[in-house]
Image (cartoon, rainbow, N blue to C red; front, side, top):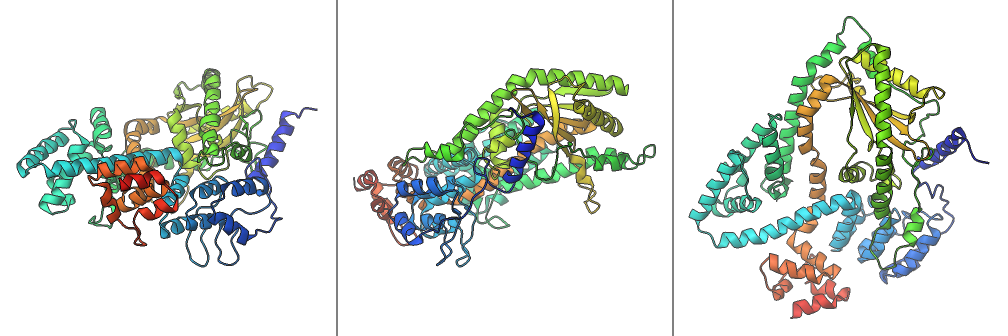
Length: 599
């Protein structure tokens, strides 16, 4: 007998309750009913027996804790893999949700620390990439590769230029930056390098740096100038200069991007205060409606079936998009020696693609019904100053970035947490009308008999005005806020979308001021991840030993070219153990790399 929608929802609520405790949907409860033979596990680990670990994990993952510690030294399986340089096994353990952050109680080290200590930088990079997500990790990697190539070009150019030529290039560059004209990033990096080498001073004290910062401040203070903002994004912020680390920086070793970010934060606070403070204070002190402010910051909505354990996800609503595979099934489909990540691939390629297709399929009906509902609300409230705006479908790259940045620690599939691919906004000229419209909208959707639209229910309410509820909050910290309702759309193929209810002066601020500044501030996540990974990929020595451990003969050839050295000179570079690259090459039997160096 088929379950009714209400019965199905109750079942899913129970699933979500279990799910909330940290297990995946397909693997709800685990019982620790086998004892680990740590002696045998260490022997298999040292031998690099990937077949054994794949079979062991596949058969027993629900019967033991993958983050269990060896009673003798508190090491986990992942820590042993890092200590013994077993890249493939470390990769497998991470796929099975091994905790990369767990700390050994005795040594106070985590898996990353072990990988660094024993010189297995390839595993260190693997751990960092698993933390930030593959797509963002590849963006960081591409930026680092560009810096490595630039370094080789710039150093060779500098060797073959006299001071007069460099001064001429410097004058051209400063003029281009001052007048917001196109310039080559290689030229900017060359001039930066020349200041360090030729003048023997910090580039931070140079006229070039002063020009860069002065121009930047001028542009961010006037977000209405679209032409200059485009130049800033295309030529200025995209420069690798901002992602270089400098030991002589006044606050220690940091990225120069932190300077740009600090300027943006100050300007954002300034613009928020100028644009929003008067309007917000006006609502607070409204004498005609004394409780409007309190109603605004206290507003909330909970569906009749809602409780504290309920998760709002695309795969937990009735007729929502479900996974075709469990994590266990995906891992079992992967070839034994393959480093392919089926979980990440399925999540961000298969599941997310299916979700986006479903969003496109229902988009026209959703927007049509929303327009109809808002017109009804206008009539009933007798207010024509209510504006409905169709939102564009969220782009694929933004979906991927949001999933990896915001939901990377959520249960599989992480992209099921995306709730705003379909979206629209409703704008009002006053807060009282906005609250009345929201309540009327909820009433219409909740009336199961009268509601004939594609919007079936309200899954969640997020009131941004709560940010002003804290009495201890700094009064100068004004910001863009709105009230969002996540709604369930469709019949047989359902999806959760988002409706924003906001005030017209908030929209004006967001479109003219906030959005432009946010486009720079959004790079903060990238810069933080860059800071974590760059020590392994920019450090010439670590870079070389990572290539050697991986057996990347093509990468070693590029290393030789970019650094303008001979293959025999590689033997003069040693690691912390005073070993040459021959040590990891021979340890892991990388014959091609050995031939490259010998020849």
